Length: 165
Image (cartoon, rainbow, N blue to C red; front, side, top):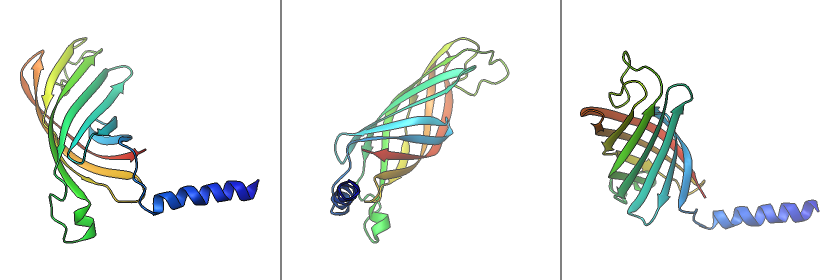
């Protein structure tokens, strides 16, 4: 039995070692503003959809989604590392619902107590996706605008990690 399990594990790891690509769905976490659970669905080498969920049980829930356009080899390919960096840009939306009094802290879309907010996001970032393992590391800045309940500028960003399967 031990030999069978060891053989299966060796066979599976060899599949990744010979260039088996990971799947189109990546899940992970982004640390920043907001710190959130994040996902990415890759449609092609230039098109993807990004989504996230952040929450505080006693304060707010925040959901965002972005349409991303990647620029493969956007920094050139002078080194292996540089060739694995992919800049991207996009457009998206953010939805926030707050539950507590925010009259003194309106950092989330300029919102006050118990209201819903909607905004537009423009993510600008870079992703490093080494061949093995199937992780992607990314950094992004996200300027945007809150449109509901009031119009105001917003700024988000973070560093993140996703595992693709």
